[in-house]
Image (cartoon, rainbow, N blue to C red; front, top):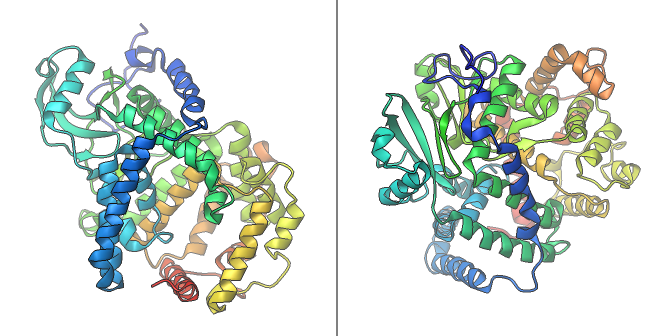
Length: 530
């Protein structure tokens, strides 16, 4: 074993004074982590193969539970007005997802990041699935911990809080103190999660191909690919040694980028197993505690902006990023730093994908639509032989911008359907890394609405572009042959994407939200939704 270094801050974005030093060469649980990751990915084809018959028992269980929730809603809340109706249905669905287990809870967590896409009542209710899922009893937790340790809990922990800090789909976390005196957080896997997940993935894999071409939005999302992504992600989440390695990778990337505003908790050098992860305990404010942060002298949006840049940088410069940002997976420390948590979902891209992301970002800021479409194609969002000229014509790039908020509802629906059909004809879909990325962007969108509703979105995008043009100009030019310092920002493409007519150079998030609400109302009236 190599001699441990004097410190670990030269390698990783950790807290200034940790309870132990992380020496990558001396971490016992890391020895076979590469083989473990390869083996977990090798399981995915078997889990997602198309079977002749679905798992009927699981189908029946899910169908009965969902029909029961809908039936209860129809008989009660549905008749009591729109807001009460939506809230009641959302609450019943959330409770049903909790009962159905990890796979459905994961789906609910994805919905909880979709503010602006899904109804607010559903998003707010499903946010409880992030860390408020009914926990396992302490007797179950003790049994798992002692099995993983191979000895009594008291031989390792001087205290172990029986009430969990949070509980989610795969695991729950408890505060504890090691016998050596360090305050820690212990993540403990639910005992039956593996078998349940395998049944649910099998059911999803059976039905996913049937959805292709039948539901337009499902086709765009590419259901079989989503099931494969879900399987790959959740299989890796079932081994906490892989999550601990993800923690080190993100901490290394953040440190290499030179950011001091984002930190990662240290995983314990020895107390990491397949079903248990002991890590440094960090504390702070939740994202929604805006008043408390400001009272403590913290400027919430400044911290969020630093996280946004770190996230984009991880994707386009390093090819590694936290894949599941939401309010339950991070908090703001009292020294104005973002502490990231839960690294089960971590985006990893090969060089082609990373460079495509980079090209997408850079060329978007100079309104090079053709290069943007090429980048989408290289990401796997369009077929390799997609007719990009046809896509440009479909998007009406050469026509004046039309403000969708001024269009009639039926006209707006026709426009959406025309574009959607045209994109599907070119093989449009949402590949997994793009899905992770977009999911995180939705988190930032929701966070801005809370922390800085009057923020000028257009100016902020230009500001982020300026950061990359200043800090990474040489790397960008080398990777994609684009010199951001020599390119002039062209906002016309962004105005088109937002549906802004004329030379509009500013748009607050509050105004953007109002435009979204106006569009939603038009679509509701045109489709007869209440």
